[in-house]
Image 1 (cartoon, helix red, strand yellow):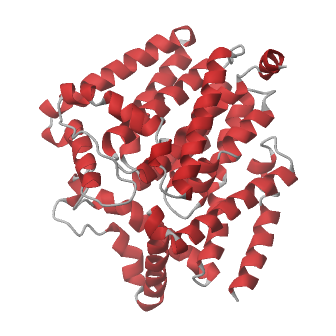
Image 2 (image 1 turned 90 degrees about the vertical axis):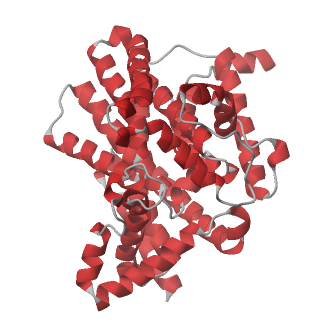
Image 3 (image 1 turned 180 degrees about the horizontal axis):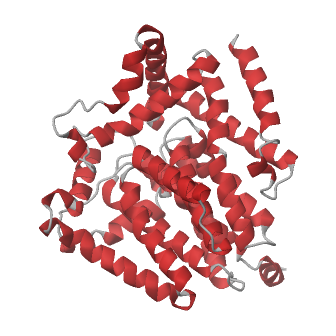
Amino acid sequence: MEYLLFVAWLVFFAWLVTKVRFFTNSGLNQSQIIIVFLLKVIAGILYGWIGVYYGSLAQMVDTWNFHYNSIQEYQLLHKNPHEYFTNLFRDPYEGGLLKFLGSKDSFWNDLKSNVLVKLLSVFDILSFGYYYVNVIFYSFLTLFGPICCFRIMIDVYPRKKLAIAIALFLIPSFLYWTSGIHKDGLIFTGIAIIAYNIYFGLKEKKFNFRKIAMILLGLLILLVFRNFMLVIIAPALLAWLLAAKWPKYGLPLFAGVYTFFIVAFFTVRYINPHWDFPQAVVNKQEAFMQLHGNSVVPIKKLQPTVTSFLENIPQAITLSTIRPFPADVKHILSLAAAVEIDLLLLLFLLFIFFKTNGTHSRNFILFCVFFSFSTLLTIGYTVNFLGAIVRYRSIVIPLLMIPVLAQIDWKRISKVFS
């Protein structure tokens, strides 16, 4: 039964992706769209398979926990529909709604998993509770994120289709982590929806109801699945909008906006104690440090002070951008991550020495760079598991690597080494 359902739904969605106008207007032909969709399905299947056979080793049991919990929710729909439709909005903690960035006893911290389980329970209605059939539904839903990103980047770099496709669809960690049934694919989709509608709204100089609604949808996705991303993306979006108004001053505006937000990050707690952002970051780090796993690395404990955050910058950057080192390799997944990051760093060096002319959408690239590095810095401050670091950073890799690959002068390189 599972195999028949899988084949039937796979054929249906492989056909459907060629009929969705948003996909077909992307610049990819029908065969390419199907290939990208199938790559996501294959990656999602691999994700689930590793979760079964190497879940403990690779710290990937979450995806199956979500699945089993969704089966319970699916059964609850039949037994108690009222509870099914209302339990998502119930706060089981006293004051849990007020702990927006809380790591425990927080309504918002639980919301991301609860919503994902609820979404999977909807898939279960059509899949009869089969995990690998749900992978097809999830792959289709999260295909909108990469296609949004592709449509932006093909407009930014109109003659770099191959480089964009490689950096967006074929980087292993991004494909793997955003295709498996977890939160990352949805988070990237939220980011991409926001960026897509702002980019083309600014280009067309028109923000209609549809674009505004889609931006709000993207922000809602981030609020639900990783709420602290709202804090990270806010200064990047504000700086981008200001730079669009005064395009000649893009870099100074980004620098100014980020300076303002950094000062506010450390001082707003004196206005309202509930907005203690440094302590929230410290709490996140402490929550990770209390966990146990095979990829844990020793880190210096963060304190909610300016001095401590400055002292921890080198550690944070090292953790989130260049690890795992070869010495960190313990299994095939960590080996793949180590090889990938070394290759990406090599491409970045080629970009530095063989860079072509810039892009006409410089301020959008500034958005990508500032947002990506602030995300990486946050990861480096809070996470001490290499496996989790590789997963969390995967969502910003395309935003950094597409400009790199698109602006490398491969002809110069071939002349140098020929």
